[in-house]
Image 1 (cartoon, rainbow, N blue to C red):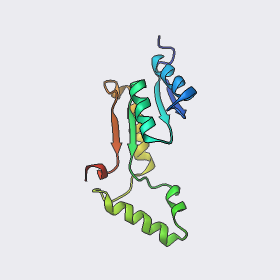
Image 2 (image 1 turned 90 degrees about the horizontal axis):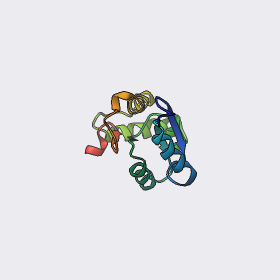
Image 3 (image 1 turned 60 degrees about the vertical axis):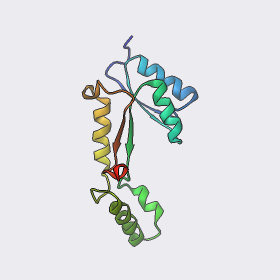
Length: 126
C-alpha cells in the first residue's frame, strides 16, 4: 500500500511505544518519516527497525547556544570555541540542516536506507 506516498511525517518520541509503531506504519504506507527521541542509542535502534535514515547535526548556530551563557560576551566565546573545533571553522546554520532534511525527505534520496547523514562541518572526521 502507499496511502502516504509523497507525504512527510515528523514523529516525536519515535523510538518506542506508540511513536515507534506510528513511524513504522507510516513508512510501510510510503511516507518519509523523521523521528525524534532523547537517547541516541534508541534512535539508532528504531532506525534499524524502520529501515530509514538519520540526520546527525553538529553544533548549529541557534538561540539555544545563548542559554549556555550569562552574558553576550560569553555567548560569543561559546560560539567561537565550538567553531574552532570544526574543520570548516564555523557553526552550521539552521538552513543547512533544513537542506539536508529536505534531501532525505525527497525522491533524490530514494536509494538511501539505513544511512546516517552527518552534517557537522567535519568534526566527526577529526
